[in-house]
Image (cartoon, rainbow, N blue to C red; front, side, top):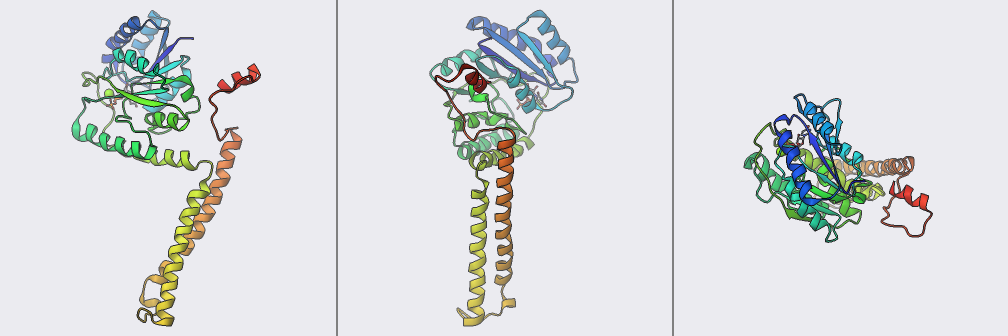
Length: 327
Ligand code: UDP
Ligand code: MG
């Protein structure tokens, strides 16, 4: 088993790969740890895959996974995580915007007792209006909602201890939220500034629209993490609020009609009775949705044998059982 698994999603990066591969090997030579490099070709339509095959033929520590079509960076990262056998997992971009020489410092920080060390592109070399600025707002939001203050979730270069990634499933643009999952599962998360270079070859695959997807993903994981085991708490509260608004506006409408307080108004003269009825219906819906969600959640946990907790260590248990636990 190697100590380090470096994995890189690759999508049409033919001009960058040669130098990238060389830089990773240089960085590894300095470190002296055992390592593997996993390139995940995400359905490139240029010569990326041929180059990767050459690297793999030249050195057994280079591994290549190639997708049948383009599935996106998150899928490529998930494949990298699934294939990695190292103690420490290090994702990286394949466009030379990250510097493999920073891995030394990530590892040093990890050794201080952290489970996740996130790279922070302090001096980011991307377009300000479409990339850097929206990303700054998104990072603020993610930090606030996720409860893990990091400057740069979007930076690919990070280092993870293997066990914090064990139960992480990635969807959408969610690879950037791994530090949040890790923190929620009890991992210690920190960040250090890393180098960032402008893209000199090939094209960026993203624009502004990604920031919006990221915000949707954030709402999803917040919901999943906080309420996955008890959705009725969320829907129940929404139901209570709807009932309260209904009772208040209904009551007020009656006061105006029957007691002429604060002044007389018939039911059809104010929107209050309609509001009362709509909110009543909505409240009932919320409760019913909460109950359906409860059923879904039970199906989710029970069908997959997913526990509602994560275990860090178990002592003196049967060996095979412990191995099972570690997978
Ligand atoms: N990438 C990928 N599949 C895609 C889009 C991108 O594997 O559908 C890879 C790409 O080759 C690069 C990394 O993801 O290694 C980051 O992409 P990019 O540099 O375009 O993003 P940016 O740095 O502009 O955010
Ligand atoms: Mg890039």
